[in-house]
Image 1 (cartoon, rainbow, N blue to C red):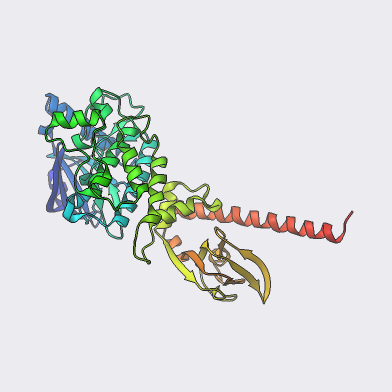
Image 2 (tube, helix red, strand yellow):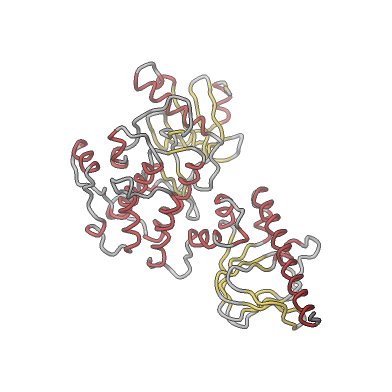
Length: 434
C-alpha cells in the first residue's frame, strides 16, 4: 500500500528517534489513525542500492515485511502494518515504553534474578512459537528484547530472520558476533540450536554483566567459540542456583549434540531454577503459573498463546482452613482453579464432593448470564491456594480465548455428568446386586 507524502505526515506525528539499524531508523510516533503511540520504522530506498550491502539490506527488510501480521504471540512485538510513502518504506509496530534489556548488561546494573529468570523463560517460549511458525530469529541479544509495563517483555527485530522452508534467497551470515553459534563459522545452516546458543549467551551477559569469553579481537573470539573456551558462570557469580548455571552452560555448549535441541528442554531447566531463587512472598512467577496450567487437563487443548493470555487475567488468592471461598446464593462471576490444598463442596449443609489440586469450580455462576448466582458453598479444608479468573476479565479477553474457555467448560460438564452417572450406577448395583 502506498501513502502520499502529505497523507503520511498527517497520519503520524513524530516524537523522537528510538534507534537506528542496517535497514532503517525507528521513531516513537503518534498514529492519528490508531490513536496510540507506535514504533515507526522508516527505511530509505538509498539503503537498497545494487551493491552487496544494498542487496543484503533489501533482503533483511523483506524478511520483516513478510512476517508482518504473521507472528501472534504475547512476547513478540506486533507488526501492525507495512507500506510505502513517496519518501520511504515503513513498518508500524507496537511501542513498548520500558527500553531494552541492554540497560541491564553492565555489572553495576544487573536485573533482579527473579525478574531475569521470568524473562528468559518467556523469551524461550516465544522463540519456540516462532520456530513452530517456521522462523529462526538469528539476532537474539539484549537490545532486541523490549520491556513494557507490568513485567511485559517482547522480542523485536526479525530483519535477520531465516525463514524455514522458504524458496526465496536469504542472507547467509548474519547476527551479532558474541551471540553467534560456533557452527555458523563453519558455514553450517542455521538451526533452532543457533538461536538457543544466542539466548544462552544473552543470559550469561545479563547474569554477569559480561560475555562468556575474554577474547579482545574478532579472530580470538571466533577461536574461543569454536574450541569451547568459555568462562564458567560460577567463576563470575558464585551465588547462582546450580540449575540455572547448568541451563546456561548447556545452552552455550559448542557441541550441538550436547546443546539443547528444543526450546521446551531449555524452558524446563530454567523453571527448575525458580524454587531456588529468593523473591518477595507476594511475587508469583507468571512462568510458574503458566507451567501449572500446562499440566491441567482443563487446558489440554489450549495453545501456549492462549494460556499466556489466561495468565494475564489471573489473580492469586489464599484461604485459611474452614474459610468459605464462595457461598451458596452469593452473586459472582469469578471461577477458580485449585493450585494447592483441599476444599469441600456443600449445598444446604449437605456435602456434595471434595476438591483438590487442579480442580475447577465456580464456572456455573459465570455461565449463568441471567443470575450469576452460586449454587453451592465451597469451603477450604486446608490452607488453600487458588487461581481466580474474574468473569469480567474473560469477557474482555480475545474472542478466541472466550471460545476456547466455552469449549473447555462444555467438556468439563460432560465429564462431570459422566462421572455422576457412573457413581449412580455403582450405587444402584450395590443396592440391588445380581
